[in-house]
Amino acid sequence: MSKLLEGKSALVTGAGSGIGRATALAMAREGAWVACADLSLDNAKQTLKRMEAAGGQGVAIQVDVTDEDSVKAMVAATVDAFGGLDIAFNNAGIAGHQAGPSGLKLADVSLEQFNAVMAVNLTGVFLCLKHEVQEMRRRGAGAIVNTASIAGLLGLRTGNAYPASKHAVIGLTKTAAADHADEHIRVNAICPGYIETPMTEESRERHGNRIIARVPMSRFGEPEEIAEAVVFLCSDRASFVTGSAWTADGGYSAL
Image (cartoon, rainbow, N blue to C red):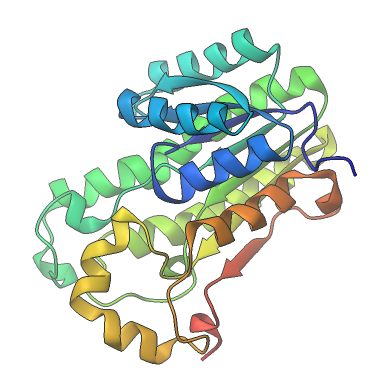
């Protein structure tokens, strides 16, 4: 049986942990060559090591997605390694508590904290999209998935800039999909719920019982479950899917 991403060249940002790491490993398992990009080169190398141990192939790249020159260099390094770029998963992101104090109501959030979240979660996705699409044009096709969130579909009390950034990612996704459909480049967003990753650890520790009480499936999600959805969206089996925001949240947003 053929693999879903056989012979594809792939790029994953935020590949050093959580959903990014799980997706890089899943893409490699499905036959892709994967560039594992992360702000922490050590973490990216750890993902690459796991990938190679499982028989996959790839490279590790350090990137700051808020810096355009760094993003351009990341895409160029991917192309140098694999000869082109077919699929990308723009997953790098931060929560509000990673940029400043947690638990703040919106009126108490500093502009610096707000801007720090938007720089990674929104500007970073824009820069990655821009330079990935430019390269995919040369290939004549491509598929991109951006990490949004259920916080891009709902409000999130004391969520800081995070919900704003993720709502914007969905809008950016739909715009990019409409702009580049005639170039055979598909762009979709994945909207995870509460997943067991380092980024959600604080929320799970502080509000875990309340969160689980709202999830019809009565559990947190696993990074690998999001990875499988991303792999599908990047594959030819999703050939008519573009401009969508796929929810994977155990039913949280259904209530």
